[in-house]
Length: 276
Image (cartoon, rainbow, N blue to C red; front, side, top):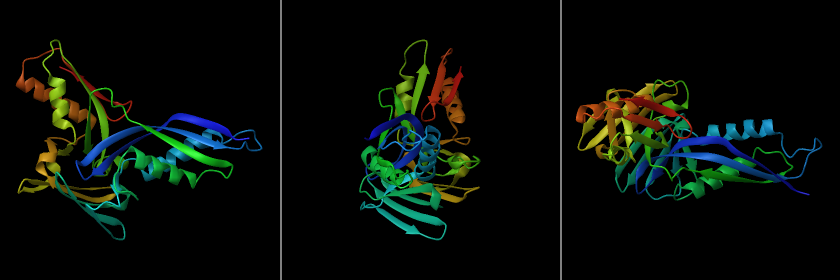
């Protein structure tokens, strides 16, 4: 008799999607999984400790903090070298060029990257590492679309982990609490949604309405060229802490509002806030 085991919120995936329509778009998913199979000799389907460890590791290693690329699409050209990848994408919003170590990408055999195609991919890679008594795995990817949010991408060259990858991102809730409603929250959401947020110090070239961002990090050399209209530049590394400080400083410069709270999530369940 088959038994179903479920684990909600087993992990969070923060990544960016390569879209023909929008270019590079940040995304964050909370991950739930269900496993179906027969009990083993220990009376378990799969030890919970192993479920959390093994499944989270696969998702972290193969999908999280990467740019998800549709390899069956007609707008992407990929050149793979020994340890790096050169990618060119001709999107509706302009051409995008990326040079990155191979671990900065997740290549999926589909013509479009969306929740459905990533779910299928996640289930296929997980099925390869599960015990033989597991007959099926189901993945549910949940994005918080109800609360006001923006989808941004960035790369953090000083980060010790995978945040240093140049094209990963987040779906981030932004809350600007004002004493009197002036529409600041909506203005900033519109400004940052779909943008690549870059440190001015990492802009190595600009011209013909295009920007090139480049830096060297522990994982290797990264370079990104894209239309300038898709980039929002700040005077610091684009950590969530620096982003909320930037928003707060801009509001202070442009208005005399006080008693205002800027709170921004970096994906799910974490973020930064500042009061002015």
